[in-house]
Image 1: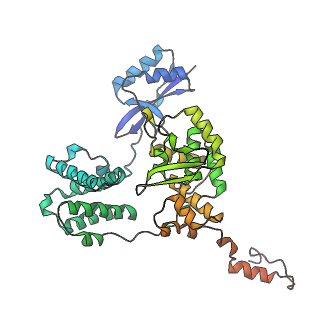
Image 2: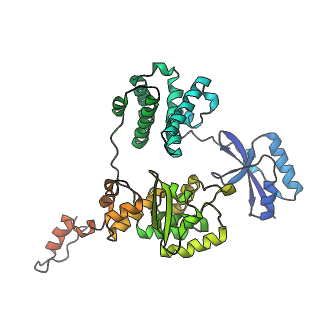
Image 3: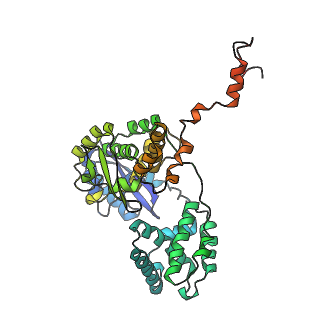
Length: 399
C-alpha cells in the first residue's frame, strides 16, 4: 500500500509541511497536486504547504479518505531552524522590496535604471548594478544632494569590505557607484577608482577529459546531459546556453550561432560530431519550439537549475573539485590548447575581446608542463643509471 509521508522543514522563512509518497506513484502525485495552496521546493524536492494545525488535520483527513496510509511521525519532532548562511546586510539586500524605500528613494532607483538603459547597457548589467545601488541607497538613507566621495568610501568599508565580498564583486560595485555618481553630476570617477581592488589572478579550475566523461555518464536525465555536453563541447557561457534558440543550430555546418553574446558580439562556435545523436534524441523527445532549453511556459531555462544538476552529477561522479558551468568552458579551452589548437582560434571560439584573457589557459595547460622533469626525478634517474651498482633506490626505504 502507498504511504503518504508528512514531515516538517524550514523553508523561505517559515515552517512547512512536506508531502511525499512512498513509493512514488502517479495517482498519489495527482492527489498531492490537487491540494489547495500547494507549492514545490526544489531544495527539498518535495511539495509543501504552510505548517499549521488546520493543514495538519486537513492533510491527514484528505489522504485517509483516499485510502492512503499516512505517516506523520516526523511532524511530532521539532526541527532545528538552520542558522542564517548570509550576513545581515546581504540578507537585507536579497530581500529588499519597494516597501523598504520611501517614494523619494524609489524615484532615485528608477532614475538610475533609466540612466543605465539610456547608455544601452545590457539588462544583465543593469540588474547587477541596480542591486548594488539598492544596497547603497538602503545604507545611505540621505538626500542625494549630500553625496560625496566619503559616503561611497564608508559604504565600501562598512558593507562590501567588512562582510568580505569577493574581489570581483567589489570591483563591480565600484563600477555601479561610478555611474550613480555621474547621474548626480559628481566628477569623482578617479577617486572612486581608488576604491577598486586589484583583480585577483586566480587560475581557473579545469577538469580532465576523463572527469568530463564521468559527469556526462552519471547524468541520466536527457535534457541535463545535453545541456552539460553543449556547455563543454562548444565552450559556452551559461547565459549563452540558456539564450540558445532552436534555429541557431546548423547541423550541416556543425555550428551553433551565438546571438548577442557578452559585449553584444555575435559568433559561431563548433558543434561536436559526437553530440549530434544526443542532440537529436533530445530535440525529438522534448520538442522545443523557441529556446533550445525551455523552462516553464516556454521561457528560457533557469541557470540555478543547471548549476544544481551539475553539482549533483559531480557528487555522483565523485569529483571533489568546485565545479560550475563555467568550469566546463575553462576545460574546453584548456583541452583545445593541449590538443595543439592555435591560441587565436581559441580566442575566437570563446568570444574573448582580448588575447590576454585567453592566455590564462597557457598557465593551466599541462601539455608543456608534462615534458618538464622535477629535479628530484632527475637526481634519482642519475643515481639508478646502469653505471651505478645500486640500481634499486627507493625514497621510502632506509628511513
